[in-house]
Image (cartoon, rainbow, N blue to C red):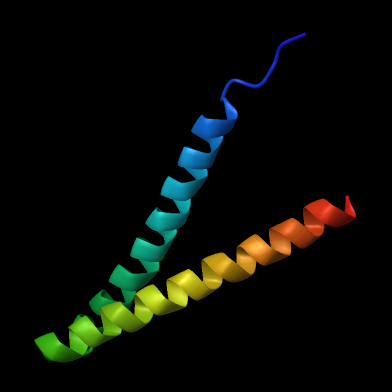
Length: 73
């Protein structure tokens, strides 16, 4: 029988990179939307920071939902 192709450490590292990429994507999209709407540099930076906060919140929520789903399985 064939085992998993990733070790537990590799799986955790990949998961961490995916989460960080998701947070960065949400943060950058907030800044880009602000720039497209005609925001100043300070407003765009604030939008990026708020987007990063929203991204972290989403990742934490999805992590909680996933752990609940795995626990019930």
